[in-house]
Length: 109
Image 1 (tube, one colour):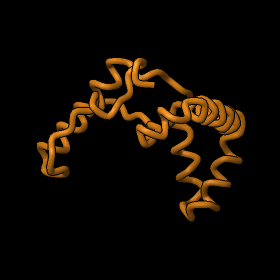
Image 2 (tube, helix red, strand yellow; image 1 turned 45 degrees about the vertical axis):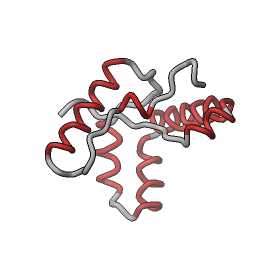
Image 3 (cartoon, rainbow, N blue to C red; image 1 turned 45 degrees about the horizontal axis):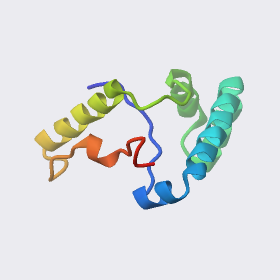
């Protein structure tokens, strides 16, 4: 399987109508990522309280995870397409998905 990524999803019409929200959300996530990197133990404690998942599991998870905001490159889209194709072939999703169809291009924003 390709590398896993985290994504922020939004309704296309909303993102187009309020583009400033996208930038604000990314800025705030960047601050949170920095806080987690500075103090992963505190983050693990808080996540454990919030989710009832043991703190030791959160610590291990946070140690293994990469943080930051990255652009959606062709490689990222290809990796997600590979995952979607694998899920379709395994019968986990009923319809074949084209990841590119879910993305906004710069002229659509």
